[in-house]
Image 1: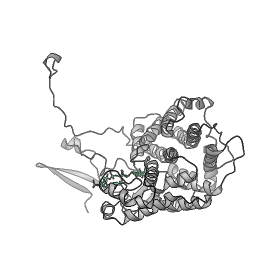
Image 2 (image 1 turned 30 degrees about the vertical axis):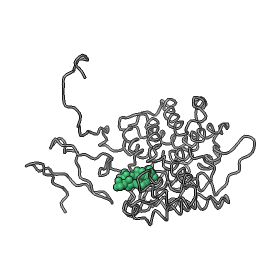
Image 3 (image 1 turned 30 degrees about the horizontal axis):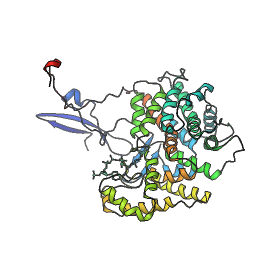
Image 4 (image 1 turned 90 degrees about the vertical axis):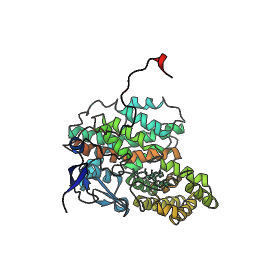
Length: 426
Ligand code: SDX
């Protein structure tokens, strides 16, 4: 098989090198196409475009496979921990016991925030959406760290990565406590990453906080499931912002802003609110008809890449059962979700469009059972995805061919014309 494709435009042929990955689709290298042919490629939404080379995450959408540095997500969710997955995503390998101890210590000793930073939250209304708080707070973090800004220095990139992974739980917990009118809780170094986060969210000064190992494990697993996902919209946002050399914390704030959208990370909140709106199994047929009439989308369903089950959704469903059982909760919305899934998976409309549950379909029921309000769901997604964003940002800077991202366009506006004085208009 030749290692090039030939494009014919008019009476000219243009060779496009075919680049092969370790697995997945090959790519046509079009980097020289505009210079040679005076033509752009056109792919709004990037449905057929690879924006970069990466070694971090691989998704086979047809087979429903998700690998992080080659390890299947279901194995990592079952056998690993979020901090171990952070090391894997950042450094490319699962850590040895010694490497993990060092990595965990680096993260643990960066969880505190500058004392002055807490007053930043006071500028928000108590009823501000926590994602608005997160976008502002993480962006503001760049004002507190004027050191380690040389993004071309690997050591400084590593410090920024550790700081972000470590501080996101502290900021997210503050956004939650602030919205609830409760005092902020300082991180504790003797607690694990997920235990520390749950304590900062749910402990109150009036009594000792007792960790629940099932909920801690569930939280850690939920973080693993949300850690990274190839070149999704928010990761592409972080890469594009980072390509200009912007402050890494500001780039992550850009990623948080993008993730907030209902088509992306905001879908977990939308999916639970959709289940609440449906309310009971009896209302499912009418709701599904509304989807087919294109009045609204089935939130938590469908995916740009997965045209089969999202492997994370299966683990999320299992975790949902475990949490509800542990808490002795019989949530009627779980029955609605399961029936809705069954109806959708057997309906030709959804089958024809290859629409399956994605990670957001069951996460909301689980998080609500754990005590989080719906407006915190995407904050938890952003907390977990920070390691994916910063790992992809770091990989971009390790690529010697790195360039600032600057897409072109198909221009269909007015061609050149002369200025018209106001008295001659209309
Ligand atoms: C995440 O990219 C990632 O990896 C994201 C993510 C990550 O970890 O980073 O996985 C996280 O964002 C998961 C997705 C969460 N979003 C939702 O659950 C919102 C609902 N889903 C849809 O908005 C939609 O499925 C998208 C946005 C996720 C994907 O849309 P695409 O790939 O652009 O597909 P499309 O809009 O071209 O849809 C193809 C057809 C259309 O119908 P027709 O015009 O052909 O008749 O499928 C329909 C769409 O209308 N369709 C849906 C649907 N999703 C697509 N119809 C009903 N309900 C849906 N959910």
